[in-house]
Amino acid sequence: MNIFVGRLNHSITPLHLELLFGHFGEVERVNLIKDRETGEFRKFGFVQMKDAHDAQIAISKLDGARLEGASILVKPANERARA
Image 1 (cartoon, helix red, strand yellow):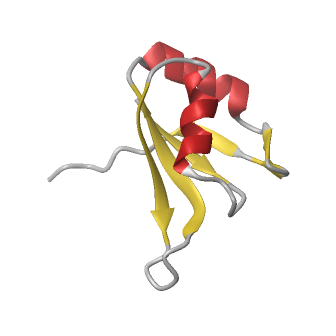
Image 2: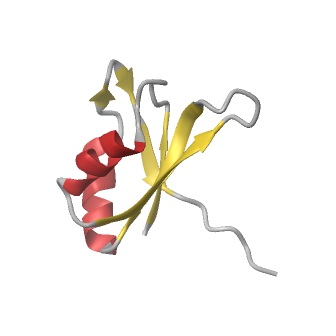
C-alpha cells in the first residue's frame, strides 16, 4: 500500500521514514520528493508498505505524530487514474 507522508522537516531522510514505518511492517520503498532546482528534499514523500493491514495501522498511529519537531500528515496516497 502506498502512503503519503507530508509536513516533513527538511532534515528528514528516506532512512528516517524507513525506520519509522518499519516498526509497523515491511517497508518496500521510500520516495522523498526532491526540488528540481535545489536538489533538496521537499516536505513530503511516499512510503510503500508490503502489507495493507500493517500500512493502515501505521497510518492510524503516525498521523499527527511529531517527527523532528514537526507534526506529520500520514494518509493513504491517491492512486493516479490510468488511462
